[in-house]
Length: 548
Image (cartoon, rainbow, N blue to C red; front, side, top):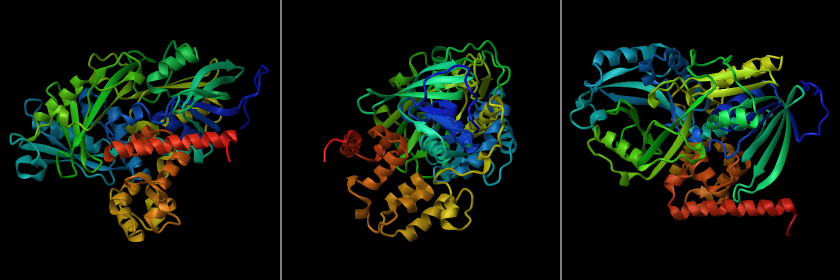
């Protein structure tokens, strides 16, 4: 569809699109992907790297949110539960089922109440392959082995795990494959209503120096504000749009303060593996906050999260010593082998942009979302709040509303779609069992590529899924994967991350596209950073036509 003619004459734009999406977190890339798949011309800009803030700092769960039942958020929990298996099918290499162990603390609530809540959790939405909940005698089960002897009764239930930062990148790649443009490290400096649409000025910066290297002009028929913690700033300071009331849909009803965000910091720590089995634990702190202990990157355990009000710049968020001590202390109530702050090998923190529901307790703030759409002064939509598990349905509803604003609703399509790397069955040409697809696929890879080191092939399978055969095309030895830049890290992988996944810096590769930062020593991490810096210099030289 051609854009609506402007009532004024203006300078040509570098890009003319139907929708400008601002924000490269999970909601932004999910919306860009959905819109592009419906045939709209889409451009997404992100001021930093993809998933560089909230969307890489989650607890990395695909879950209904068992604890939200206690706050009466049955609609949100049901919506999230309905999405679990949809998401798990879409990218089984980066998402898989996970069983959770909940030790029963009689001082918090009676066992019958836990059973009732888990029954509801099992039945609020249809399950096809995730098993239901059951009670467990922890004093007679290996699941109780890591716990202090006093924890005798517990419950086991299902949810899922996800590599959150890779989920964002795969959605962005899918959007591009369907025609969208994605510009990272590109800040939206100005958005001005122009005729029946918008004119935006974007500033792209160098990933290594921070210098502005390019100004980009965009003419868009509509704007989607998916800036997460910066959504209010973008709407009121960059777009200068007033929001007198709430006429959105999709998430929470009866919101106390529509169109306002409440920033809540969540922090996590990573420690050497605390238990040998493949289940996760969900503990309740003495302050009634929830703490997860999750198997992570084979050799580690991920522990989190905290809920702390945040009133500073979201870009400055960091875990503090009190939070580390809190997580260690609360784990000590449950585990036979307590951990100390000195055991922490990595930590991270993120700001959750939650929809302000006037709750006094940060842990009780709703994780639901609101989509606020307007046609004046030109079509725009803002995403308020949300959570990782509901990103796809949020994007679907947002795309419906954008289509309505543009006068041409188009059909939804993402419910049955796979993400790049997710079609494991298609590569193997055989059906796979849901929940077991990754292990079956890995067995197929080990037979097909016996020359690959098992640990390396396992990591590639979990990272790149069905794209592994393409990445290995033409190679029959590891030497044919290019130089080994760091132990187990070959040039072919780094080139893929740079050329197809927007990676530019060491942190992009080591902590977001992969978690190699946990597995390499300081020298190995620096070797990866140096390779990327040298690659950036070579690209600059080629671009300028300098040298031989």
